[in-house]
Length: 334
Image 1 (tube, rainbow, N blue to C red):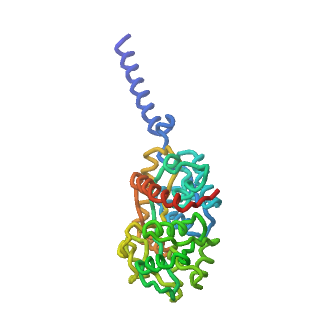
Image 2: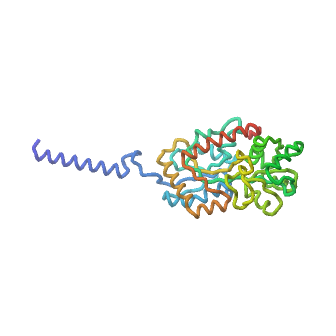
């Protein structure tokens, strides 16, 4: 080969190498070099009907996520079985970050342990992306109840084991388990009186047919403020702004009664770490915005921001905490 032909061949190799590099960088060289996530709309699933607290989480986050991710975030409603149906469907979705779900305590901690055949394993079948929010509960008694404090209520319940009871919004609900937890922690034997929802439970509590209900602020606060009910304690870690004179469970001497209903964003198991990180950052950044925090506060929720590892650990701790209560309550959904 002549010197001239050698120079020509070398030049061709240089051109080919440069072209290959440009081709790879353009994203045409295959999946390993695909355009960064996301490249299409993201589906945010809500396992409850529109208008509820879980829907509010999705709507509060939607504008900020769309801005941060540069793609539409489409809310899709899949109500059924208290959120279990949507969670079960998520386990069958591709783990690519384009189908995610607003999770909460009911289908991810409580329900799977109240059925003989688990619809999924909460600790194996999901990727925990970012916890978003939560709110504690208020323990209320009728306004004319003799107990003014939690300690007085416990003493009254032990002195009246034949009639002392507590109401709930239904067997297996968080309101049921909150009452059962009080029995376990305080050594009381309050009889469970289940209702079909919180509304009728509140009405009978006001009327004095039942003696205690531990439920969310949206259910109880209006009746406490009107004077028809009396709050004994809140299960939040801090006092509630709307009830500044009502102690926390810890302040009342029963720290183990501290509890909260919570929400967060999850995906199917096996999501790529870079996709999880991108989503988690977008959610975390959204939760720092004053307008987003205000929207959560308006719905009675506090920000409970936790990244993937923290959220996963929190889920495990919640399961360990509530499963013994579920077993003691005998609650089933079969």
